[in-house]
Image 1 (cartoon, rainbow, N blue to C red):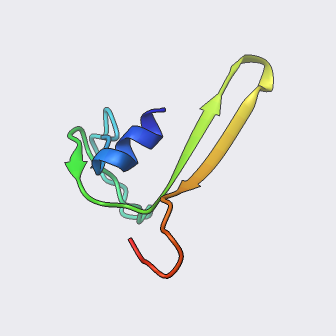
Image 2 (cartoon, helix red, strand yellow):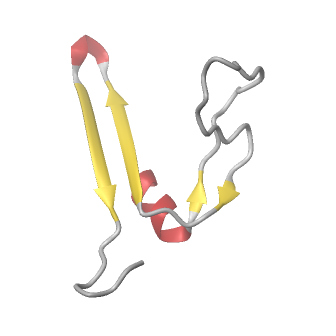
Length: 68
């Protein structure tokens, strides 16, 4: 639900406790504070006890012939 609400409101949640940048890992981090930015695709990972894991990738709906 948090992923859907983030997409709907255009807010990217922060990477909590991110303190030191690794020059070998060139990823887009959102350190410690959320940012407002529109995005079309998001992925949510869920990890549980005993190896129960799930991943979902969602994309904003765009009516045919229109772009977001």
